[in-house]
Image (cartoon, rainbow, N blue to C red; front, top):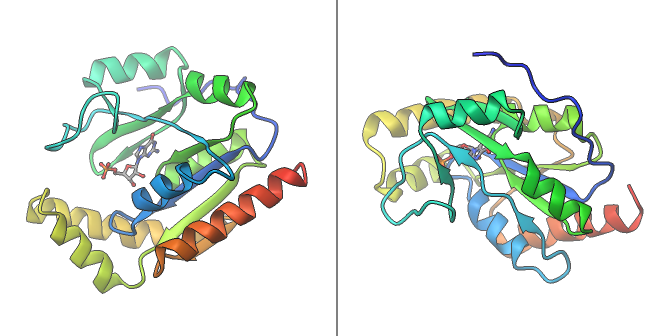
Length: 200
Ligand code: 5GP
């Protein structure tokens, strides 16, 4: 598959917040809370993925669940702001909704892995990049097991991936240890609002 990417995507300011973190870091909860915060009220991007839906997930809410050929079409057409293979599945951010919302003056938030975040950094250097850490590896592992949605092999793969992701987190603008959710969210929103008001 070609890894050629659309070069003409330009988002000129800090209205984009990119959040990464290992599975089990609590980043999805952080994203939900930031999304509900009236100081920013961002659009939350819905990613496309080739992963199968888990129980309770539905198409168009958690993800756009696509067949591999459908996903590859999006890549070919240049419709993705970024994409990456994570845990053996493809994940990507449809560009259009993000560009439209930002064009209307709204803020936008992406929850994506480190590989995808690097691609966004190239296209949108002034976006705010935040990496969420679990309070400890023990907490991260017990959260992964506690989900009960993945079998042992998947848990192991996610743990190995977590170690790798954490090792690549040094270039993010902000690294937050998520030991107190309210504080994590407050810190993030305050920093984001500040950057936007300074016209970063
Ligand atoms: P999960 O399958 O547990 O929902 O997500 C697995 C990983 O894929 C997470 O690290 C998540 O941040 C990442 N991910 C979700 N959506 C995207 C996306 O659009 N692009 C990229 N690069 N990673 C994504």
